[in-house]
Image 1 (cartoon, rainbow, N blue to C red):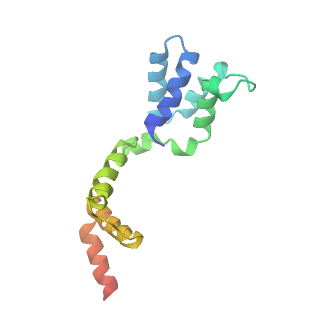
Image 2 (image 1 turned 120 degrees about the horizontal axis):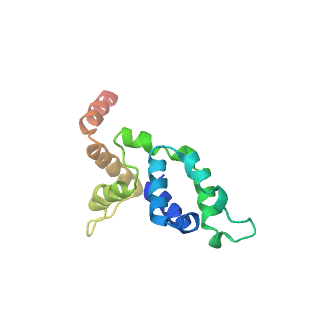
Image 3 (image 1 turned 135 degrees about the vertical axis):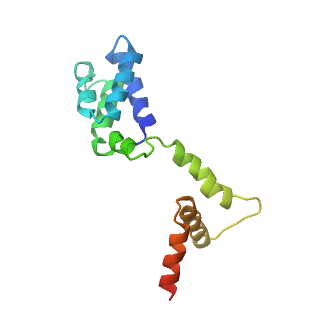
Length: 142
């Protein structure tokens, strides 16, 4: 899950959880990056709003639920150790470069089938798989 998105939920809860929201938020971000989700969830314990309060007025409860339901998607430490991005910025940027730059040229139009083939080729090239793709293609054609 996108780290920035998770931090938006934490930021909404910060004012309720601490008289020093920025410091509290920074601490929780570091805990998420080191896979200490249980400590983050525990920091909400004494601040959870009652169930009769609407979600719009219960940022701590909403954040707690959001993170609890996505436990398996929060391996930020593992991603960072592998050099993988934990935010969606690179993906969104790649979408503009890999997809839109080729398919959204003035006057261009594509059938769905041809667009999918073009995208597959562009992705292979962007991921450094160009030579391997063509080697596999030649083997399959033989």
